[in-house]
Length: 159
Image 1 (tube, helix red, strand yellow):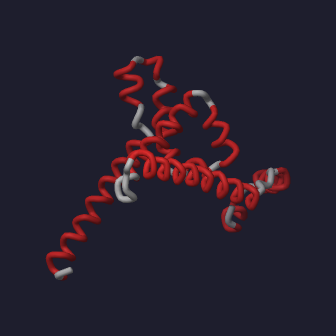
Image 2 (tube, helix red, strand yellow):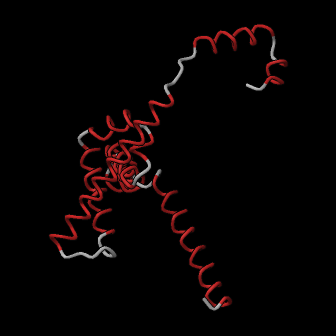
């Protein structure tokens, strides 16, 4: 809390703030960053293995292998989330499991599982993209803006 705000607090509140700071659990920031780095990297490593398998066994090219790899990673994440395994990975790794595309799959399936008792249409269908909807919305909007900028640069810049 800022020092100016602390000065405006009553004496009891200032004592409580000091009491709270003394007993606050210090988070192991470096340890958490290292765990997130390695788990996120391991997820990406698995994605690279899946890409390599698609290239060598299913005749995909490096340009076309991205979509099936992402779909496979999301499918694996949804299975792991359904069995409760991905939640444990997320608790251990923190942001390391949320940043790759697997975090998107986890967000979608978690909302679907949570609201399945309300029915398929209003429960699962209505709440599945509650968290992931904003990601989809801003992803599509960002792609539109970038495509618009690229079109303007090509038209006016002669690129």
